[in-house]
Image (cartoon, rainbow, N blue to C red):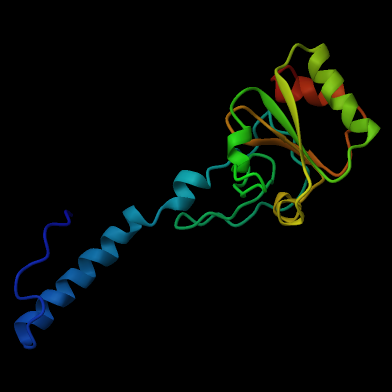
Amino acid sequence: MVMDETEADIDRDDALGEAKRAALTEKLRILSRQFNSAGVHLGYRYIHSPIIAADGAPEPPDDPSQVSPSTWPGCRAPHAWLADGRSTLDMFGDGFVLVRLGEAQQSDEDLRLAAEGAGMPFNVVDIRQPDVSALYERRLVLVRPDGHVAWRGDEAPADCAALIDRVRGLQ
């Protein structure tokens, strides 16, 4: 089905105009599945991937017509505007990024050291915005270079090296 120019006479106040409006309404209803597909394009997630560290939380809604922002491991990291005018999405793309929401803790450094020891490109970004903290759901979120969440937690894992090996595909 193709969306052509709107037909002449569509605004007529008679049976012909009504029929043309009904045909256009049906065409738009059918085509809306193609155009209302943000969930397909931006809501893609990896499920059961060996390089994602699942946390046991239930999978967020998966609706092809809309995006449900989440840091559920495997989902794309959500967009939010930062105080300096950048998007959180601007932080991703050059290696792995550990997003820290809240105060840094010594165990957070263990993740950085494990990544550094493995030669993995790794950056740490601190965000102190309550709205972003709520959106990101956990205090620590590890995001892959492709913008998908590899792991999340409220504290660093007991074995940071094992996590780094997993998200690099070595386990």
